[in-house]
Image 1 (cartoon, rainbow, N blue to C red):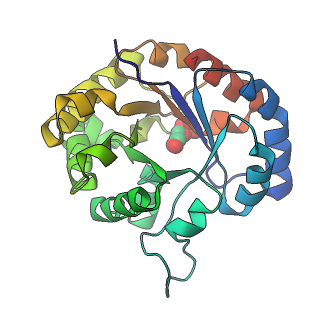
Image 2: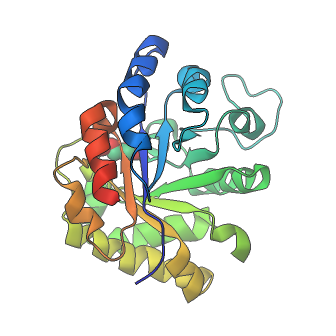
Length: 253
Ligand code: 13P
């Protein structure tokens, strides 16, 4: 047994206007606040971050952004800096597979963002996971451990313990075909904790929270949360449905 605190984050992706965001948060804030013992985080699109931040004041629910640049300022049209994110948020999603697949984000860029997040004091939620092709050819371990090794390069031991990792097999994201709890647990154990142990040490590997992500719902969440290596979830589609998201957070408590 470990004392890792359960963690559930909702990644809204590119969904919800300002007005819709307000409605969504209003619908789930009260039930979410009533659930103790789980670290809860909402990650809306940038345009809704200020309004969600104002709604979360005094609530036991954190706020995160879905992406940021690693540079502090300058000629990077369309990007936001770590300190801009930090003005409103305590968490930052880094290296989501959609950023990697559609926007060409590399492990090296993930590493730069991770260092920038640590420097400014954001809690990084670093995403890793294999594609369907890599899964089917039995390369999950190799791919995920490479993502961890390169992504975490140069991170010091003290900082490493603050990082949250999301294991999101790409084939399970938005497909309705979640991994099985056992399969995800095995990947976390063999690919993630093992690599963390080799990179840092066993104590750090055991202290870092690792989430599962990919078609998590209120009904399959208990299967993941009952696995010894899985400490919570990074939720996409179901985080846009108040009842589903609340059910997932309850399952983690
Ligand atoms: P879904 O829950 O919609 O499959 O998305 C998972 C995800 O990518 C969360 O970051």
